[in-house]
Length: 235
Image (cartoon, rainbow, N blue to C red; front, side, top):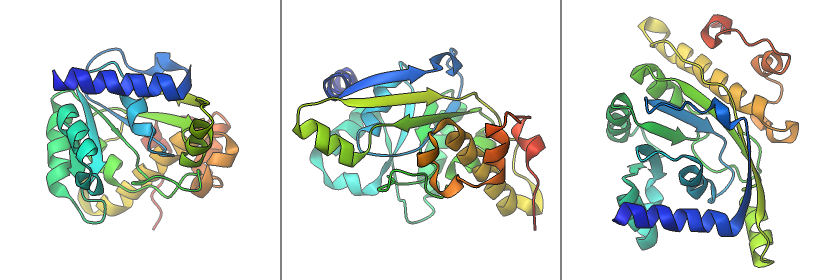
């Protein structure tokens, strides 16, 4: 019952605060197999947007440990069965929980940036998403979001205006397992691939750290071979 109430409240929040435009939603896999959705992170409204956009009941969401201090946030985390994660240390306990649920067929939604971008542009990605995807052997679906910036939310909502939000869905791809001595280097290459896939779906002014990345230029030019065939490891 608590789960249904939480989802009802989330959908109500989204309907009251946003006008959502979906681009290429057909790229979202229709089965209930394991999947990692990676997206940029602009504002606090990104989280309710996840539950409004996905119609699945097996969503895996990692929540920053700081929200344990908020009673309302704790209630939502409990009802939605989200997982708290320590953003500042290697939280292997949280990653193990997420990995178990991924292997059971859950869909995980996370931002490889690890935090909201206050400037609105892409920050440098962290390797967590790459590690989980390669370890679990599940596909990755890149998604780009615009219009949920906190500054826009504050401005529009104080004037009783809904946010104009766009969700652009990319095409899923997979990462092979990480093995051998190249572990760290390969994870970095995987992370760059993930972030450039997101950047390619964003308007130019949102691409930030990855604006001049060579892989992004390939993607924008339509050069999209299987990701790991196009990655070269440089020492």
